[in-house]
Image 1 (cartoon, rainbow, N blue to C red):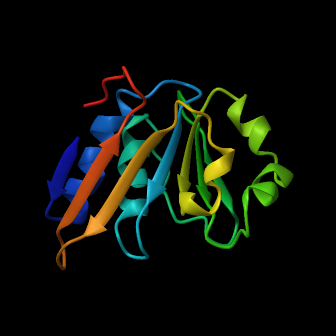
Image 2: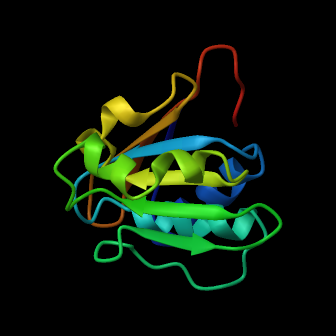
Length: 143
């Protein structure tokens, strides 16, 4: 599935729509360069999950936890060298906590993801325009 958004608000709105279809335990792998809109999408996902606190990039903390009806665990793998570091910070524990794990800079830890991972690539195509490709696991409808 491919979408085009023309503002940060539209990107967040797409995230909110997507979140309505997510299930506890889902892993969402995000791909896109710096400034592509990954955190904006996650901000919308949090809203769609009923989380009312502000969402910020976890670049320096590695993971931010947002509690709500379904928790959201927002990871940023930009500073990690590989999946082994992700496992060292308790990745498997997060997978078992019944929340949604959303991972920015997923290309750095690709081998850590389960086969049913939802993949989202965000491409900046203009100052405010983004092309967003959502690839759900085979047999699963998302939007």
